[in-house]
Length: 289
Image (tube, rainbow, N blue to C red; front, side, top):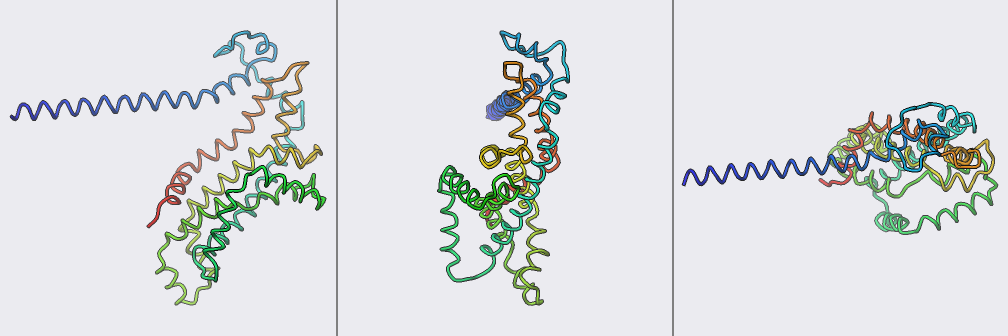
């Protein structure tokens, strides 16, 4: 009996180890699949223009790496200016969005006013509107206000997000009501309570929203392409397309990949620095109690 029990326990441990090994193998395989496009992007960026176009079969390595594509990316078009424009657009949009999102989430989570639930329900229903319809409406509005080829026209349509407000509202509601009642007894105003209590407690979620918005703005393509035709207001998305078309009768893919690598570095660094807060913010925003 004891031998059978010991044997069954050993078999169970072996099965558990095999299952765990299979899980790790699957995760490693899937990680390689996810990372391969990044590897291919970097590899292409260090291949010479002639060497890349002479490859009938794509090569997974290069014997003669070069940085000439990075020089080409910054000299064929004013990519540095596009970087500066993108930073202005990203910082301005994210800053205004944070103010709108924090105030709206706090109002829906903590303040009491007539019709609050109905207003919030109508607010959430905006998420059901196709983004294409919103783009058309925003384009007509910005054009009628004569705000094309301006940073104001670029920024205004992106200063709010129903999803971010909902995510932060759910996070605010997890803060115990006793803290709010105690603060009101001490004579603390709602605005001071929000800055001194709610924002510090919910900082991981706010950091997560900030980083997601930065990534969204940095990768913005459709709206900047629609609203700007003046090179002084082009973002990096415009620059990538211009670099791609700078080849000698052919698409300059290596230079374009070099520009994509240079553009991706700030976002990768940002994610590496704040990855723990991002994970914590997302997990807290999706739980109750």
